[in-house]
Image 1: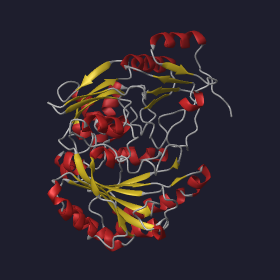
Image 2: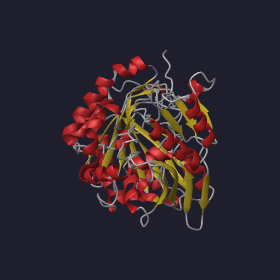
Image 3: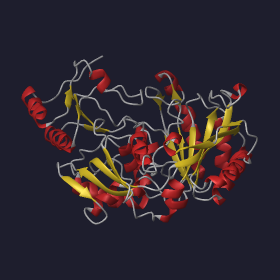
Image 4: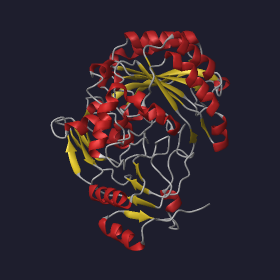
Length: 461
Protein backbone atom coordinates (compact mmCIF):
# COMPACT_ATOMS: atom_id res chain seq x y z
CA UNK A 1 0.00 0.00 0.00
CA UNK A 2 1.31 3.49 -0.88
CA UNK A 3 2.34 5.81 1.91
CA UNK A 4 1.91 9.56 2.07
CA UNK A 5 4.75 11.87 2.99
CA UNK A 6 4.33 15.32 4.52
CA UNK A 7 4.43 18.34 2.23
CA UNK A 8 6.60 20.12 4.83
CA UNK A 9 10.29 19.56 5.46
CA UNK A 10 11.87 18.01 8.54
CA UNK A 11 12.64 21.40 10.05
CA UNK A 12 8.96 22.34 10.05
CA UNK A 13 8.02 19.04 11.64
CA UNK A 14 10.70 19.58 14.30
CA UNK A 15 9.11 22.96 15.00
CA UNK A 16 5.75 21.28 15.59
CA UNK A 17 7.40 18.70 17.85
CA UNK A 18 8.81 21.54 19.90
CA UNK A 19 5.36 23.11 20.25
CA UNK A 20 3.42 20.07 21.48
CA UNK A 21 3.75 17.87 24.56
CA UNK A 22 1.94 14.92 23.04
CA UNK A 23 3.30 12.39 20.57
CA UNK A 24 3.58 12.87 16.83
CA UNK A 25 3.25 9.63 14.88
CA UNK A 26 4.51 9.34 11.29
CA UNK A 27 4.36 6.66 8.58
CA UNK A 28 6.96 4.06 9.42
CA UNK A 29 6.63 4.46 13.18
CA UNK A 30 5.82 1.19 14.96
CA UNK A 31 2.44 2.48 16.19
CA UNK A 32 1.44 4.29 12.98
CA UNK A 33 -1.09 1.67 11.85
CA UNK A 34 -2.75 1.69 15.26
CA UNK A 35 -2.72 5.50 15.42
CA UNK A 36 -4.50 5.87 12.08
CA UNK A 37 -7.33 3.42 12.84
CA UNK A 38 -10.88 4.64 13.28
CA UNK A 39 -14.05 2.93 14.50
CA UNK A 40 -15.53 2.37 11.03
CA UNK A 41 -13.21 0.00 9.18
CA UNK A 42 -14.54 1.26 5.82
CA UNK A 43 -11.99 4.07 6.13
CA UNK A 44 -8.41 2.86 5.71
CA UNK A 45 -6.60 6.17 5.30
CA UNK A 46 -3.00 7.21 5.68
CA UNK A 47 -2.43 10.62 7.25
CA UNK A 48 0.94 12.35 6.99
CA UNK A 49 1.06 12.66 10.78
CA UNK A 50 -1.10 11.93 13.80
CA UNK A 51 -0.78 14.39 16.68
CA UNK A 52 -1.85 12.85 19.99
CA UNK A 53 -2.71 16.01 21.88
CA UNK A 54 -2.59 16.12 25.67
CA UNK A 55 -3.89 19.65 26.27
CA UNK A 56 -5.36 22.75 24.65
CA UNK A 57 -1.87 24.05 23.89
CA UNK A 58 -1.25 21.04 21.67
CA UNK A 59 -4.54 21.68 19.90
CA UNK A 60 -3.67 25.32 19.24
CA UNK A 61 -0.22 24.42 17.90
CA UNK A 62 -1.65 21.74 15.61
CA UNK A 63 -4.41 23.96 14.25
CA UNK A 64 -1.89 26.71 13.55
CA UNK A 65 0.45 24.28 11.81
CA UNK A 66 -2.29 22.79 9.61
CA UNK A 67 -3.51 26.25 8.61
CA UNK A 68 -0.02 27.58 7.85
CA UNK A 69 0.93 24.52 5.79
CA UNK A 70 -2.40 24.29 3.98
CA UNK A 71 -2.89 20.67 5.01
CA UNK A 72 -6.17 18.81 5.55
CA UNK A 73 -7.01 18.62 9.26
CA UNK A 74 -9.08 15.75 10.68
CA UNK A 75 -10.21 16.11 14.29
CA UNK A 76 -10.76 12.85 16.16
CA UNK A 77 -12.46 12.41 19.52
CA UNK A 78 -14.04 9.00 20.07
CA UNK A 79 -13.41 8.13 16.36
CA UNK A 80 -17.03 7.01 15.82
CA UNK A 81 -17.59 9.28 12.81
CA UNK A 82 -19.24 6.91 10.34
CA UNK A 83 -18.08 8.91 7.28
CA UNK A 84 -14.52 8.65 8.61
CA UNK A 85 -14.03 12.36 9.29
CA UNK A 86 -11.62 11.47 12.11
CA UNK A 87 -8.94 10.55 9.58
CA UNK A 88 -7.61 11.65 6.20
CA UNK A 89 -5.08 10.87 3.48
CA UNK A 90 -1.94 12.97 3.42
CA UNK A 91 -3.01 15.47 6.08
CA UNK A 92 -2.96 15.86 9.84
CA UNK A 93 -5.06 13.89 12.31
CA UNK A 94 -5.53 15.77 15.57
CA UNK A 95 -6.31 12.97 18.03
CA UNK A 96 -7.90 14.18 21.29
CA UNK A 97 -8.08 10.69 22.78
CA UNK A 98 -5.61 11.48 25.58
CA UNK A 99 -7.57 14.53 26.71
CA UNK A 100 -9.97 12.74 29.05
CA UNK A 101 -10.04 14.76 32.23
CA UNK A 102 -13.39 15.30 33.99
CA UNK A 103 -14.37 17.39 36.98
CA UNK A 104 -17.85 17.17 38.51
CA UNK A 105 -19.29 19.81 40.83
CA UNK A 106 -22.25 18.16 42.57
CA UNK A 107 -23.42 21.46 44.09
CA UNK A 108 -23.91 23.21 40.74
CA UNK A 109 -24.61 19.90 38.95
CA UNK A 110 -22.01 20.64 36.32
CA UNK A 111 -19.38 18.43 34.67
CA UNK A 112 -16.33 19.87 32.90
CA UNK A 113 -15.35 17.29 30.29
CA UNK A 114 -12.30 17.32 28.02
CA UNK A 115 -12.85 16.79 24.31
CA UNK A 116 -11.36 13.31 24.10
CA UNK A 117 -13.75 11.77 26.61
CA UNK A 118 -16.26 9.08 25.77
CA UNK A 119 -19.75 8.81 27.21
CA UNK A 120 -18.51 5.96 29.40
CA UNK A 121 -16.12 8.45 31.02
CA UNK A 122 -18.86 11.02 31.61
CA UNK A 123 -21.41 8.53 32.87
CA UNK A 124 -18.96 7.00 35.34
CA UNK A 125 -17.82 10.34 36.73
CA UNK A 126 -21.32 11.79 37.07
CA UNK A 127 -22.84 8.62 38.52
CA UNK A 128 -20.55 8.84 41.55
CA UNK A 129 -22.68 11.85 42.57
CA UNK A 130 -26.04 10.40 41.51
CA UNK A 131 -26.10 12.59 38.40
CA UNK A 132 -26.35 12.11 34.62
CA UNK A 133 -26.93 13.96 31.36
CA UNK A 134 -28.04 12.98 27.87
CA UNK A 135 -25.38 11.01 25.99
CA UNK A 136 -25.27 8.35 23.33
CA UNK A 137 -26.47 4.74 23.43
CA UNK A 138 -23.01 3.22 22.87
CA UNK A 139 -20.60 4.01 25.68
CA UNK A 140 -17.49 4.20 23.47
CA UNK A 141 -18.93 7.13 21.48
CA UNK A 142 -16.97 10.35 21.90
CA UNK A 143 -18.63 13.33 23.54
CA UNK A 144 -17.44 15.82 20.93
CA UNK A 145 -19.01 14.59 17.72
CA UNK A 146 -22.24 13.51 19.38
CA UNK A 147 -22.76 16.79 21.25
CA UNK A 148 -21.83 19.20 18.46
CA UNK A 149 -24.17 17.32 16.10
CA UNK A 150 -27.07 17.62 18.57
CA UNK A 151 -26.89 14.54 20.75
CA UNK A 152 -29.61 11.85 20.84
CA UNK A 153 -29.85 9.49 23.80
CA UNK A 154 -32.01 7.69 26.32
CA UNK A 155 -32.54 10.82 28.45
CA UNK A 156 -33.51 13.18 25.63
CA UNK A 157 -37.27 13.15 26.32
CA UNK A 158 -36.67 14.21 29.94
CA UNK A 159 -33.46 16.27 29.72
CA UNK A 160 -33.21 17.45 26.11
CA UNK A 161 -30.43 16.76 23.63
CA UNK A 162 -26.80 16.68 24.70
CA UNK A 163 -26.29 20.12 23.13
CA UNK A 164 -29.24 21.47 25.15
CA UNK A 165 -27.33 20.63 28.32
CA UNK A 166 -24.23 22.63 27.41
CA UNK A 167 -23.37 25.51 29.73
CA UNK A 168 -20.12 26.44 27.99
CA UNK A 169 -17.38 25.17 25.68
CA UNK A 170 -13.70 25.95 25.25
CA UNK A 171 -13.13 26.28 21.51
CA UNK A 172 -9.99 26.61 19.38
CA UNK A 173 -10.94 28.43 16.19
CA UNK A 174 -9.27 28.32 12.77
CA UNK A 175 -6.97 31.27 13.56
CA UNK A 176 -5.69 29.49 16.68
CA UNK A 177 -7.70 31.57 19.15
CA UNK A 178 -8.81 29.91 22.38
CA UNK A 179 -12.31 31.08 23.25
CA UNK A 180 -14.58 30.22 26.17
CA UNK A 181 -18.10 30.37 24.78
CA UNK A 182 -21.29 30.76 26.80
CA UNK A 183 -24.72 32.22 26.19
CA UNK A 184 -23.27 35.59 27.23
CA UNK A 185 -19.72 35.42 25.84
CA UNK A 186 -19.05 34.53 22.19
CA UNK A 187 -22.71 33.58 22.14
CA UNK A 188 -22.73 33.27 18.34
CA UNK A 189 -20.27 30.40 18.51
CA UNK A 190 -22.08 28.88 21.48
CA UNK A 191 -25.21 28.83 19.34
CA UNK A 192 -23.32 27.28 16.42
CA UNK A 193 -21.66 24.41 18.29
CA UNK A 194 -25.10 23.29 19.53
CA UNK A 195 -25.71 21.28 16.39
CA UNK A 196 -23.32 22.83 13.86
CA UNK A 197 -20.97 19.85 14.09
CA UNK A 198 -17.21 20.43 13.76
CA UNK A 199 -17.44 23.36 11.36
CA UNK A 200 -16.34 26.09 13.76
CA UNK A 201 -13.34 24.75 15.64
CA UNK A 202 -12.04 22.14 18.04
CA UNK A 203 -13.87 21.89 21.35
CA UNK A 204 -11.24 21.10 23.96
CA UNK A 205 -13.68 21.13 26.89
CA UNK A 206 -17.44 20.94 27.43
CA UNK A 207 -19.38 22.02 30.51
CA UNK A 208 -22.56 19.95 30.85
CA UNK A 209 -25.54 20.51 33.10
CA UNK A 210 -26.31 17.35 35.06
CA UNK A 211 -29.57 15.96 36.38
CA UNK A 212 -30.38 13.94 39.52
CA UNK A 213 -30.55 10.53 37.86
CA UNK A 214 -28.80 7.54 39.43
CA UNK A 215 -30.55 4.17 39.07
CA UNK A 216 -33.08 3.54 36.32
CA UNK A 217 -35.39 0.79 35.11
CA UNK A 218 -33.77 -0.22 31.87
CA UNK A 219 -33.27 -2.82 29.20
CA UNK A 220 -34.74 -4.25 25.99
CA UNK A 221 -38.04 -5.99 25.29
CA UNK A 222 -38.28 -7.88 21.99
CA UNK A 223 -41.37 -8.57 19.85
CA UNK A 224 -42.02 -10.13 16.44
CA UNK A 225 -41.52 -7.60 13.65
CA UNK A 226 -45.11 -6.49 13.04
CA UNK A 227 -46.76 -3.20 12.09
CA UNK A 228 -49.20 -3.41 15.00
CA UNK A 229 -46.32 -3.44 17.50
CA UNK A 230 -44.93 -0.26 15.97
CA UNK A 231 -48.39 1.37 15.95
CA UNK A 232 -48.72 0.63 19.66
CA UNK A 233 -45.22 1.95 20.27
CA UNK A 234 -46.24 5.17 18.53
CA UNK A 235 -49.24 5.45 20.86
CA UNK A 236 -47.07 4.77 23.91
CA UNK A 237 -44.63 7.59 23.07
CA UNK A 238 -47.49 10.02 22.41
CA UNK A 239 -48.95 9.45 25.88
CA UNK A 240 -45.89 8.52 27.94
CA UNK A 241 -44.39 10.48 30.80
CA UNK A 242 -41.22 12.26 29.64
CA UNK A 243 -39.26 10.29 32.21
CA UNK A 244 -39.65 7.23 29.99
CA UNK A 245 -36.85 6.84 27.46
CA UNK A 246 -38.19 4.71 24.60
CA UNK A 247 -35.61 4.00 21.89
CA UNK A 248 -37.04 1.56 19.35
CA UNK A 249 -35.12 -1.08 17.37
CA UNK A 250 -35.77 -3.02 14.16
CA UNK A 251 -33.45 -5.83 13.10
CA UNK A 252 -32.53 -9.44 13.69
CA UNK A 253 -32.79 -11.15 17.05
CA UNK A 254 -29.44 -10.96 18.86
CA UNK A 255 -27.87 -14.03 20.50
CA UNK A 256 -28.70 -13.01 24.07
CA UNK A 257 -29.76 -15.50 26.75
CA UNK A 258 -33.16 -13.93 27.46
CA UNK A 259 -34.27 -14.28 23.81
CA UNK A 260 -35.17 -17.86 22.79
CA UNK A 261 -32.61 -19.33 20.40
CA UNK A 262 -35.22 -19.88 17.70
CA UNK A 263 -35.48 -16.07 17.40
CA UNK A 264 -31.75 -15.50 17.02
CA UNK A 265 -31.15 -14.05 13.57
CA UNK A 266 -34.86 -13.71 12.77
CA UNK A 267 -36.63 -10.35 12.17
CA UNK A 268 -37.71 -8.72 15.41
CA UNK A 269 -38.40 -5.29 16.81
CA UNK A 270 -37.94 -4.02 20.31
CA UNK A 271 -37.99 -1.15 22.73
CA UNK A 272 -35.22 -0.18 25.11
CA UNK A 273 -36.81 1.07 28.33
CA UNK A 274 -35.08 3.82 30.30
CA UNK A 275 -37.46 4.82 33.11
CA UNK A 276 -36.02 7.54 35.35
CA UNK A 277 -39.11 7.83 37.52
CA UNK A 278 -39.76 6.25 40.93
CA UNK A 279 -39.13 2.58 41.62
CA UNK A 280 -42.73 1.98 42.71
CA UNK A 281 -43.81 2.63 39.11
CA UNK A 282 -41.50 -0.06 37.67
CA UNK A 283 -44.11 -2.80 37.35
CA UNK A 284 -46.53 -0.46 35.63
CA UNK A 285 -43.84 0.54 33.12
CA UNK A 286 -42.90 -3.09 32.44
CA UNK A 287 -46.54 -3.97 31.84
CA UNK A 288 -47.11 -0.97 29.58
CA UNK A 289 -44.14 -1.89 27.39
CA UNK A 290 -45.15 -5.57 27.34
CA UNK A 291 -48.56 -4.51 25.99
CA UNK A 292 -46.97 -3.53 22.67
CA UNK A 293 -47.23 -7.12 21.46
CA UNK A 294 -46.27 -10.74 22.08
CA UNK A 295 -43.13 -10.58 24.20
CA UNK A 296 -40.39 -12.84 22.82
CA UNK A 297 -37.91 -11.98 25.54
CA UNK A 298 -36.97 -9.14 27.81
CA UNK A 299 -34.40 -8.03 30.32
CA UNK A 300 -35.83 -4.94 32.00
CA UNK A 301 -34.37 -4.44 35.46
CA UNK A 302 -33.19 -1.77 37.88
CA UNK A 303 -29.62 -0.81 36.98
CA UNK A 304 -27.19 2.09 37.38
CA UNK A 305 -27.78 4.60 34.59
CA UNK A 306 -24.28 4.12 33.06
CA UNK A 307 -25.06 0.46 32.41
CA UNK A 308 -27.81 1.14 29.88
CA UNK A 309 -25.30 2.92 27.66
CA UNK A 310 -23.19 -0.24 27.44
CA UNK A 311 -25.91 -2.63 26.27
CA UNK A 312 -24.95 -2.32 22.58
CA UNK A 313 -21.18 -2.13 23.05
CA UNK A 314 -20.52 -5.82 22.37
CA UNK A 315 -22.83 -5.81 19.35
CA UNK A 316 -20.96 -2.99 17.57
CA UNK A 317 -17.27 -3.06 18.56
CA UNK A 318 -14.64 -1.08 16.68
CA UNK A 319 -13.50 -2.61 13.41
CA UNK A 320 -16.84 -3.36 11.75
CA UNK A 321 -17.88 -1.89 8.38
CA UNK A 322 -20.69 0.69 8.45
CA UNK A 323 -22.71 2.80 6.02
CA UNK A 324 -25.46 5.08 7.36
CA UNK A 325 -28.52 7.06 6.35
CA UNK A 326 -30.82 9.15 8.53
CA UNK A 327 -34.21 10.83 8.51
CA UNK A 328 -36.55 12.85 10.72
CA UNK A 329 -40.30 12.26 10.84
CA UNK A 330 -43.29 13.90 12.45
CA UNK A 331 -45.15 11.13 14.23
CA UNK A 332 -44.53 7.75 12.56
CA UNK A 333 -46.84 7.70 9.52
CA UNK A 334 -48.28 4.35 8.54
CA UNK A 335 -46.22 4.36 5.36
CA UNK A 336 -43.03 4.67 7.40
CA UNK A 337 -44.17 1.81 9.62
CA UNK A 338 -44.75 -0.33 6.53
CA UNK A 339 -41.21 0.45 5.37
CA UNK A 340 -39.81 -0.65 8.74
CA UNK A 341 -41.58 -3.99 8.38
CA UNK A 342 -40.66 -4.53 4.72
CA UNK A 343 -36.99 -3.58 4.92
CA UNK A 344 -36.51 -4.72 8.50
CA UNK A 345 -37.35 -8.24 7.36
CA UNK A 346 -34.37 -8.03 4.97
CA UNK A 347 -31.89 -6.71 7.55
CA UNK A 348 -28.51 -8.06 6.42
CA UNK A 349 -26.86 -8.83 9.77
CA UNK A 350 -27.45 -8.86 13.52
CA UNK A 351 -25.26 -5.75 13.84
CA UNK A 352 -27.39 -3.86 11.29
CA UNK A 353 -29.92 -2.35 13.67
CA UNK A 354 -32.38 0.36 12.60
CA UNK A 355 -32.75 2.72 15.56
CA UNK A 356 -35.66 5.12 16.17
CA UNK A 357 -35.04 7.90 18.71
CA UNK A 358 -37.95 9.92 20.11
CA UNK A 359 -37.02 13.62 20.07
CA UNK A 360 -40.11 15.02 21.74
CA UNK A 361 -40.63 16.17 25.32
CA UNK A 362 -37.83 18.43 26.52
CA UNK A 363 -36.40 18.55 22.97
CA UNK A 364 -39.55 20.38 21.85
CA UNK A 365 -39.22 23.05 24.51
CA UNK A 366 -36.28 24.56 22.63
CA UNK A 367 -37.15 26.64 19.59
CA UNK A 368 -35.83 25.73 16.11
CA UNK A 369 -33.69 28.89 15.97
CA UNK A 370 -32.42 28.78 19.57
CA UNK A 371 -29.68 26.32 18.59
CA UNK A 372 -28.10 25.27 15.30
CA UNK A 373 -30.00 21.98 15.64
CA UNK A 374 -33.23 23.03 13.95
CA UNK A 375 -35.50 19.97 13.86
CA UNK A 376 -37.39 20.81 17.03
CA UNK A 377 -40.69 19.93 15.36
CA UNK A 378 -39.57 16.39 14.56
CA UNK A 379 -40.91 13.59 16.73
CA UNK A 380 -38.41 10.90 15.73
CA UNK A 381 -34.89 10.61 14.36
CA UNK A 382 -34.21 7.41 12.42
CA UNK A 383 -30.79 5.81 11.87
CA UNK A 384 -30.41 3.20 9.13
CA UNK A 385 -27.21 1.20 8.79
CA UNK A 386 -25.92 -1.96 7.18
CA UNK A 387 -23.12 -3.00 9.53
CA UNK A 388 -21.08 -6.00 8.40
CA UNK A 389 -17.84 -7.79 9.15
CA UNK A 390 -16.27 -7.28 5.71
CA UNK A 391 -15.99 -4.34 3.33
CA UNK A 392 -17.40 -6.38 0.47
CA UNK A 393 -20.53 -7.32 2.41
CA UNK A 394 -21.11 -3.71 3.48
CA UNK A 395 -20.72 -2.44 -0.09
CA UNK A 396 -23.17 -5.09 -1.24
CA UNK A 397 -25.82 -3.87 1.24
CA UNK A 398 -25.68 -0.17 0.34
CA UNK A 399 -28.53 -0.66 -2.11
CA UNK A 400 -30.66 -2.11 0.72
CA UNK A 401 -30.23 0.93 2.94
CA UNK A 402 -30.63 3.38 0.07
CA UNK A 403 -33.89 1.71 -0.93
CA UNK A 404 -34.99 1.70 2.74
CA UNK A 405 -34.20 5.41 3.00
CA UNK A 406 -36.03 6.04 -0.26
CA UNK A 407 -39.10 4.24 1.05
CA UNK A 408 -39.10 6.51 4.11
CA UNK A 409 -38.57 9.68 2.08
CA UNK A 410 -42.27 10.46 1.37
CA UNK A 411 -42.85 10.49 5.15
CA UNK A 412 -39.65 12.29 6.13
CA UNK A 413 -38.91 15.95 6.69
CA UNK A 414 -36.28 16.57 4.02
CA UNK A 415 -33.06 16.80 5.98
CA UNK A 416 -31.67 14.51 8.62
CA UNK A 417 -29.60 14.37 11.77
CA UNK A 418 -25.99 15.18 10.83
CA UNK A 419 -24.63 12.38 13.02
CA UNK A 420 -26.58 9.85 10.94
CA UNK A 421 -25.24 11.12 7.59
CA UNK A 422 -22.58 9.37 5.54
CA UNK A 423 -19.97 11.00 3.33
CA UNK A 424 -22.20 10.93 0.23
CA UNK A 425 -24.79 13.13 1.98
CA UNK A 426 -22.97 16.43 1.53
CA UNK A 427 -25.75 17.64 -0.77
CA UNK A 428 -28.15 17.45 2.20
CA UNK A 429 -26.26 19.89 4.44
CA UNK A 430 -28.54 22.86 3.72
CA UNK A 431 -31.62 20.72 4.33
CA UNK A 432 -30.12 19.39 7.57
CA UNK A 433 -29.98 22.94 8.97
CA UNK A 434 -33.06 24.40 7.25
CA UNK A 435 -33.62 28.05 8.21
CA UNK A 436 -30.44 28.10 10.30
CA UNK A 437 -28.17 27.36 7.35
CA UNK A 438 -27.64 30.95 6.19
CA UNK A 439 -26.75 32.08 9.72
CA UNK A 440 -24.32 29.19 10.08
CA UNK A 441 -22.72 30.00 6.76
CA UNK A 442 -22.24 33.63 7.78
CA UNK A 443 -20.52 32.48 10.98
CA UNK A 444 -18.35 30.12 8.96
CA UNK A 445 -17.21 33.03 6.79
CA UNK A 446 -16.35 35.01 9.91
CA UNK A 447 -14.53 32.34 11.92
CA UNK A 448 -13.20 29.93 9.26
CA UNK A 449 -13.08 31.74 5.91
CA UNK A 450 -10.43 29.33 4.62
CA UNK A 451 -12.59 26.31 5.53
CA UNK A 452 -9.84 24.66 7.57
CA UNK A 453 -12.53 22.66 9.37
CA UNK A 454 -13.94 21.02 6.27
CA UNK A 455 -13.65 17.31 7.11
CA UNK A 456 -17.23 17.15 8.38
CA UNK A 457 -20.71 17.66 6.98
CA UNK A 458 -19.35 20.87 5.70
CA UNK A 459 -20.91 24.30 5.80
CA UNK A 460 -18.79 25.97 3.14
CA UNK A 461 -17.93 29.68 3.70
